[in-house]
Amino acid sequence: MTKVSVQIESEAVKARVVEPVEPPVSEALATERFAQRVLGDVSAAMTGLMVRIGHELGLYRALAQRGPSTSAELARHAAVLERYAREWLHQQRAAGYLDYDRVSAKFGLPAGAAAVLAAEDSPAFVLPAFEIVAAMWADEARLTRAFARGEGIAWGEHDQRLFHGCAQFFGTAYATHLIQSWLPALEGVTEKLARGATVADVGCGHGISTLLMARAFPASRFVGFDSHAPSLEAARQRAAAGRPTADVRFEQATATDYGGERYDLICFMDSFHDLGDVVAAARHAARRLADGGTVMLVEPLAAARAEDNQGPIAAMNYAASTALCTPNALCHHGSLALGAQAGPAALRQALAEGGLTHFRIAATTPFHQVIEASVGAPMTRS
Image (cartoon, rainbow, N blue to C red; front, side, top):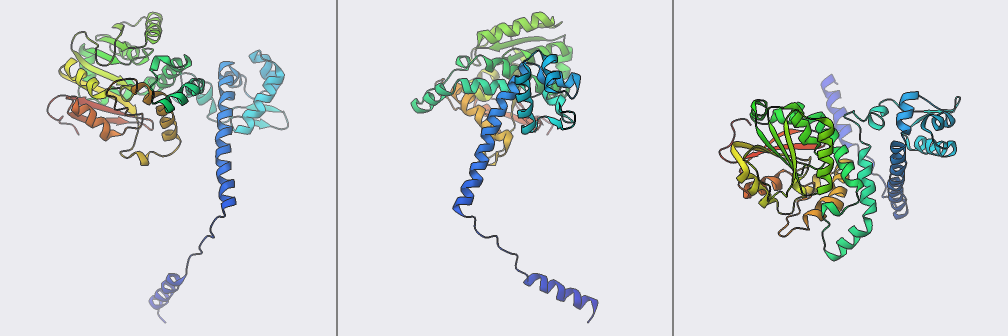
């Protein structure tokens, strides 16, 4: 028999081999597996509280500064009761947040953890997200009533921790990407800003994105608009402390009634999907744009089809959308309630109906998509 014949015979044998079929899972085993999945979420929810405490009391920072520490050493350095510190450290060890050396009885941050848990200027620092979670839990009863009664919940009616948490959590992304990559991805915008342009930051919150742009482009003029007065006051205090060299101010207004001069750039930083009447907001933006002006939307990354939004980030975005974004939109007449996972097609349609017929996804990150929109003929750059 030739080598070719042997090979053909071998392939024929392989073709006749039937892959073993896994036996069906019993109902009891399926229930056990699903219960373990849910208990994992319960553990994560409780761990979240421990993470908040560790951040608020500076326990992660202490471990980052000192290195591996016993419970007594951490308690002295962070000025907390040793018995609490010991229990917290073991919880964090069990959750996988800390390493532990059995010989020295010392706990330490694993490799890479300091940037996530202790370094507030790190692009990977995510602990402010737990402040948002705390606010969501605080509003649980109200959200349950809103579900049952078909009501909305206005942004300013939420637990106060929400506003600081959002400012810090989203501010990390803005500090990392806004000046370095998002604005440069827009057609001709950074050139205008460098020469001197007028910018509206709609839904500016604590003004972090507004002030980042103002510091980077001192020749331009910036106005941050928001409907939440306490957030605007926080923005003004932040501006006063930072003393930006650009012309920057903050005014109370909604996405459909802000005024002033014509704007070369209108920004919606993680705010467009929160609005009630997004078409009216797009229409107002189209009217307020200067000739050749640009609208920039920074939105959570989402797939074209809702059922394709899968995994931890999508689950997080849908939870925030259910508790925060959708309730705010439902407060307004004619609401489309896009939600935080609306996807490019829904955003494109809303913008186009408002007169912003130009639509381009200019940049993406694992968490965000940056959309460029404008009035007029399609842009030359793809």
